[in-house]
Length: 171
Image 1 (tube, rainbow, N blue to C red):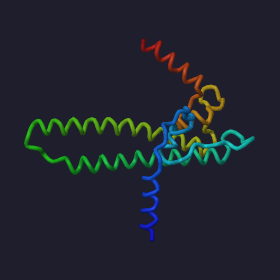
Image 2 (image 1 turned 180 degrees about the vertical axis):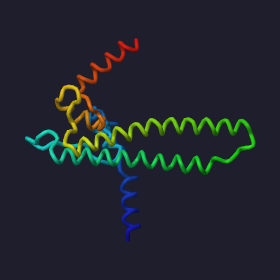
Image 3 (image 1 turned 120 degrees about the vertical axis):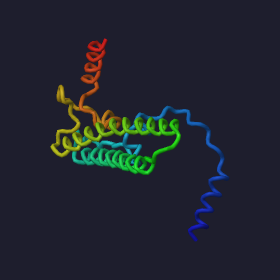
């Protein structure tokens, strides 16, 4: 019975006419957020909803936990891969290639370790109900910015100023 239904869906799909390419510009919230990477729909605020309401905090907590779990699984995968492949290869070139691959993998994991720390700081801010507000000026960071970068701690204006100062200092 289930196979019949599946076959019917597949038949319907293959007989369906091909759609023309999408001509309208996608909305900023479509596929451009971290949430969409984990199958979480972008948050749609309700009318007259207060900024960083319980629902919003829960939404960002869910995104951050999913992101952290994904990164932690990558750490486990890397550890297992390196343990399984750490055999002494007889060819010097093969050994050098393996060492370089391990070095690249470890650099990636180090960046992800730093990201995990930022995620944990954001989760703490959610718990303390301090999430979503700029560390510098205290104004709202904004839902769309947080959807794109859930670990953001600065509003767009303060972040822009910080980047300008960094450019000037690093010349």
